[in-house]
Image (cartoon, rainbow, N blue to C red; front, side):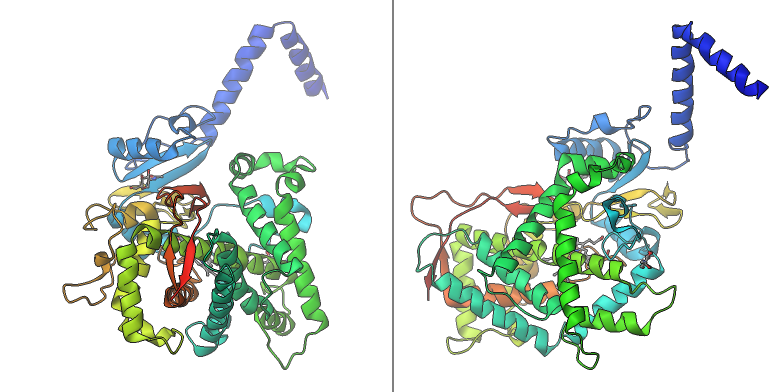
Length: 506
Ligand code: HEM
Ligand SMILES: *[C@@H]1O[C@H](CO)[C@@H](O)[C@H](O)[C@H]1NC(C)=O
Ligand SMILES: *[C@@H]1O[C@H](CO)[C@@H](O)[C@H](O)[C@H]1NC(C)=O
């Protein structure tokens, strides 16, 4: 008690002495900062000097971040460090560094940064799904389950192929009904790609004009733009503000709406659920929940919601964006489009639709699709990783818990690897005899433990959609309209600016 009184009197006397209070507070703050900021490890990757509290954030021009990053890698090399407030960040550039981290030391780099928005949105438990899940038991269980369930529905097998082929049919009919007039392909492609995920997760495709479907697509797109905004990004870096009541619900309004939508879909399934019949992913998950009702199981309602959200958000925008780039490049390179047409006519002919088996006999088309993914570079800096334990990379020490950005763009455009890194050049994937060649530095899906879970599905979709579209149509850019731009628009993914297209039936 006496101590308290003494402290109180000291505090009051401070008020009479404002400059001293100021000094005391500053010293205290700097001490606090000193304790929170990084230790001076030996062999830690070099980087710009970091200031109290803000770290190196002033070094990055947020309007032109890639310019700042280019300067930093020129000055400090392929592996450099930054500090966002008190969060240590290491950036890896070039195939060599990224390969060593993601492939050779895969587990060391397999963790994710904390992603605190979910618990603050009023769903309580911290179920993390797949994409943002920390590296551990729940992630492993969910990832294994998702991969095997999608495979049983045909990932790599016939029935998934049929689902995609069915959807390509609907897409081609919808494009046909544009009757050769100019249109923006964004809407139709998005619908078709989302429908593939709908069909897997929910067991049904939707009509493109279905009201419920339209609402889902709108919400997903808004949720994504929402997350890419400045305020949300800021809240992810400084999550403390999320504790203010109402803030998360306001800033992540669309995200919350998507979850509520998913809850509706799950409820419908529960009502019509029949344990002897697995219609889709939701059914398989419900089954798992019933059979694994013990404490360590990650099969619960909140994880179901998160996993479905992840499949939709990671599985639609990415594939749809790649296909929109694909058509844009076909407008920009009519000679390449002509060669794809020739190969289609030779291998498939006009009497049947393309199927996965054709891929092996279509090296040119396959190379074009790979080059589309390489050149479009739609997830330029991948998803952030975190070191799972202390590790070493090319002689540098990187402690456990460091955020690591593996720059995929720097791999897909690595000047020491590719013959023409900054040109659209399908020959990157062809040998002198015109046969398809795999390239090690082709990492649009990233690599290692956290490699894209949907890679097989996405590759199948890209081949079937792209080949079916070119099987049916010649794509042209409308007379008098601007050509599609080659630079992208960045919001989590790098997507083409809107453009108009004319589809002439062949
Ligand atoms: C062209 C299409 C696609 C591209 C370019 C792409 C790219 C990526 C990339 C770069 C990552 C981050 C990997 C890392 O952290 O190192 C990722 C993760 C992921 N992707 Fe994809 N993706 C595509 C399609 C899909 C599809 C169709 C699905 C759905 C089935 C999907 C589901 C996921 C999931 C669940 C993760 C998180 C994996 C984890 O953290 O364990 N992706 N994707
Ligand atoms: C659901 O599972 C996740 C992952 O194991 C866990 O973090 C979460 O607390 C669980 N939620 C409930 C309601 O049990
Ligand atoms: C990633 O690599 C690209 C291409 O080399 C470069 O322009 C960009 O600035 C890099 N980004 C980061 C975060 O280093």
